[in-house]
Length: 141
Image 1 (cartoon, rainbow, N blue to C red):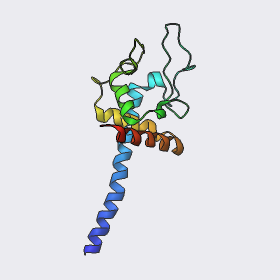
Image 2: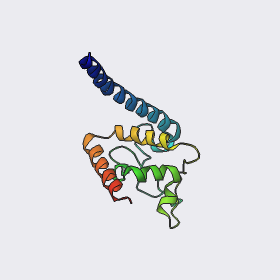
Image 3: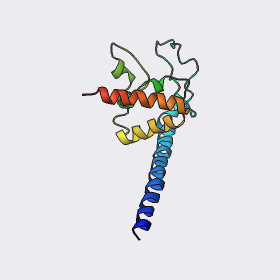
Image 4: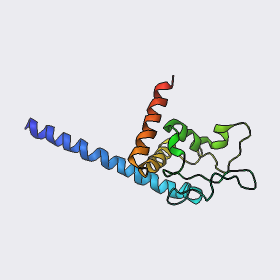
């Protein structure tokens, strides 16, 4: 009986957690499509010539796929950028068309969007970003 209960607990843990994570990614995909895709692209592709400034001096929306630079940032920074907007993070008069979403999305919703974006990266990119996030966490006081 104890073995059966232990086996049931192990099976439950190995099936429920991935399903929960999968549902967070699905929620993140939905939220991404509703809040981000109009600028960053339905497939995370960003706007054309995203590295070339527009006539107004602002940069187009970058891609969030592996071709962009999103994965160069740790999770803490990505969350902050989405919450406060790039202009607030960069400072020094930097201008961006991207607003902060702190009054629109919760931290959990922003995290779900970031998890969705990360789910679309190749394993090597995901691992690199994860190690950056880990190093950043360890460096925080």
